[in-house]
Amino acid sequence: MPTSPTPGPLARVPLHEQVRHFILEGLVEGRWEPGDRIVERRIALELGVSQAPVREALRELEAMELVTYAPNKGASVRELTLDQLRDVYQVRASLERRAITLAAPRMAGDVAELEGHLAAMRRAATEGKTHEQALHGVAFHRAIVHACGNPVLIRHWDLLGVEAWTRLSLGRLRTELHDNAEDHEEIVEGLRRGDPHLGRLMELHVMDYARK
Image (cartoon, rainbow, N blue to C red; front, side, top):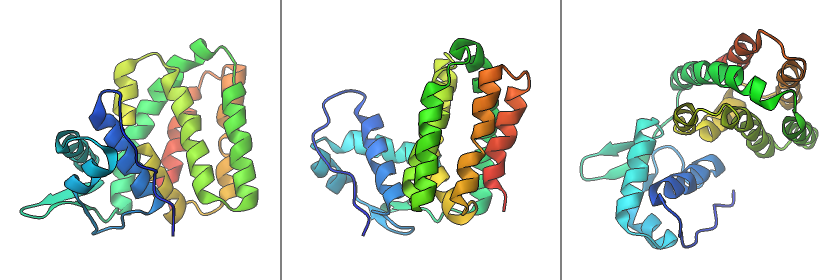
């Protein structure tokens, strides 16, 4: 059985974002499967918060199309389809195309953090650890997005639930972990040498994850 996130008191605000992250981790690690109910009161008790931030977090996850609400039943995990994944990745590709264009001059060829994640992805591929590779793959892209300096773009990217969708794409479409790791090398090299076509390169890179 996959280990679920360790619950504990949440002290910082906004609480609903921390609750959302906790639930997302549970979805990624298999704590909840498609069709399972996510009980607001139970999550609130685990985290030591009221039900209000839990409800707000679940509404955001509903907007991400990761959970669904039914009358008199509350929230449950949606069955995630490949069509949904492609829709999400089209939006993600557009955001990351702009993000890397903005981030490149700010990073000024400093790709040390990205190289660290790339090395971790290669190790995960050798060891057959899909979950570890997904975590470092998301961290790789998050580092670029957060370097863009545009807080609105960053927030919209964060709201896509990239970790959950990345895990889904690796599980259903991208089963070759070594290929997945090596695909990120081109992004690193492009940033290092200041490739003028970085935006398009990133867009194609992201959309490749939503193809069979």
